[in-house]
Length: 444
Image 1 (spheres, one colour):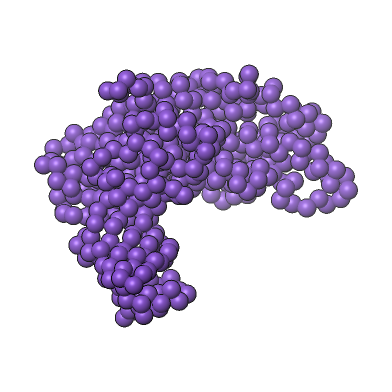
Image 2 (cartoon, rainbow, N blue to C red):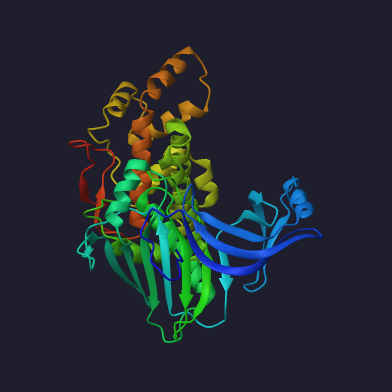
């Protein structure tokens, strides 16, 4: 199946993009042939180059024996010249086949310098959202959202057979292409390739923050006013294996179009973008819990402290950097939450944290409890009494992690000026997180 010609409909491991003449090189050694460029979906989304040609046994043996990373693929027709990993080699008496993956993705290919008016993308492992959904020609319900932002119009929709794809992902996890994204500009002069790439990077982070795990565009194509292909982007940013993931986003009530404008205002702000990207990265790494809940809690506090620095020192200038660095972590996080008018009262459902707060009177509020539990993981106890205290706190790591992740979510939503519904991950009613209006108070 060629992804240029037909929309993905799930259950396909490889989508062909284009066939080109190419060669694989290492120093003076070369293998030439026809190269098929593919988007591989499983076992993990990535670009794959498959080069086939007449067998050169001596050259094949030398490539098999290479133990370094300085192997390159060259596709002169599209200007690709990049380092690759050898995935596998096959050879018989007449033909060879060598599969390679790029060391760095995504791969950007420019076919002309024309301005871009329309971009079609496909994203992997994004979630269904049903407020504003639409029916397909076949009568199936599928997610759909139209977003207007400055001179852009963005449509995000589920691909064909989305419901079946999502059900299969819930059963088997793994990866699949789930959404089509169409970006158009209303500007008469179009968009430059650099502007499109910046937008695509932002969309990747937007999808990931909504999903609570890494989700990414795996293929994008940009067209000029006459619908000629100007730009392609092969491959993905980061994509996590599909799983149920706690997140602020409610599939039925949260609204993407209320988040996107504020998110992209921050994304396009050069002074804020890099810091916020790091905060979201740590939030997503923590949310995956791959390092265990204890390791995730450490990442959570790091994200909150970075967010406090961005908001209090860089954005608002409330305190100097020197004054900020002299204070404790709980002071920084508390000041962040109070500045953003985010409640710091402990939810009644956090029973373990409530007990800790009552038992140790030196802890003044939820922020103190969160930081103290994190410190118990990082710093060794000074005496036997403190050792017992730390052991007691270790029973509450999960609740502390959930509370910290909630603080990150609400802080980012506030910075993105989101005014809508969200899932409160610190409450559990009937096995589900309740959906509520965002709780931060009115601006001063």
